[in-house]
Structures are given as structure tokens and as C-alpha cells.
Image (cartoon, rainbow, N blue to C red; front, side):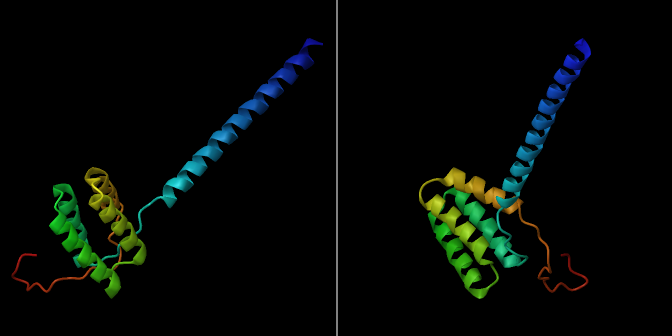
Length: 135
């Protein structure tokens, strides 16, 4: 009667292992879901907006209050004109507030992450360049 006991022990061990694997898969799935929802919003394909966000990064890393205010004005104008989506504008406003609150380094990291997450999908605004000029 030793065989049925070994089979029962093996069955319990296999069931525990299965629960463990399923638990790990569920946790990984939850992590991926949360991670994907944390992505910063997209700011669109407008070149002027990209240049302004780049200037904002320069202002934040230089801790330059004057440039920070100038970039903030431009971003507000872009939002009003519809060339900067409201979700991206709100995200950038939060970064500006963080910098104004003296948290320059965390603001710079947040802005860098925001910039790296941008996809330049969509139609880009092209500058008029004659065939003989370098672009």
C-alpha cells in the first residue's frame, strides 16, 4: 500500500506547483498591465511642441526660472491652439509645478522619461527646403 501514498503525495506537490506557476503568471500580468497604464501621454507630432519640450528640458536641467516660465507660456498656447493634447499638457504642467517647487532633479527625470516615451507617429510638419539646400 505504499504506492497509493506516493501517488497522493506527488499529486499534492504537482497541485502546489501549478498554483505557484499560475500565481506568478497572474502577478506578471498585473505588473505588465500597471506598467502599460503608467506610460506618459503622447504629445503629438507638432515640431514646435517638440522644440518647446526640448527647451523645457534645458530649462529644468539648468534650473532656469525665466526659461521655465517662457516654456510654460508656449505650452499653454499650444494647448489652447489644440496642437498639444490636454493629457500631455497636464502631464507637462505637473513637471513644471514640480520644478517650481524646487524638485528640479525629479522634474528632469520625469521630463526625460516623458520625452523618451514619445512616438513621433503621424504627419510631421515639413519645412520648405529647396532641392539645393541641406535639410
